[in-house]
Length: 126
Image (cartoon, rainbow, N blue to C red; front, side, top):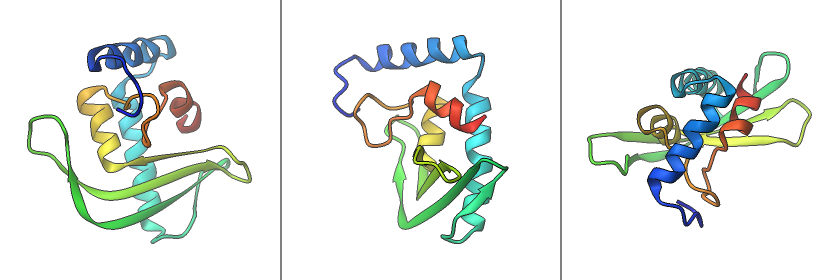
């Protein structure tokens, strides 16, 4: 949750409203994140090109992390860093992040280490 003092439902609703304005769904975003994650993982820790403007790298740690919602979901501790080629702007996500976005509409709270602002995420992904 980071340092975001808003209730969970308010965080999710605000991000859903932002997605609606931008005309994207959580499924569009999760699909693209999975596509980039697969390409980055294939690079085995090296930087890989994602199209003409982006590059990504995946870092794996041993173990899994569970989904905080009450259902059976465990996700590899893989962190993907996506950046504009030659640029300073980058974003990071985990496999859990993809699940949280797709299944729960949760992009994390402000100040959280893995908070993905929907507008910034869409700008990088598409």
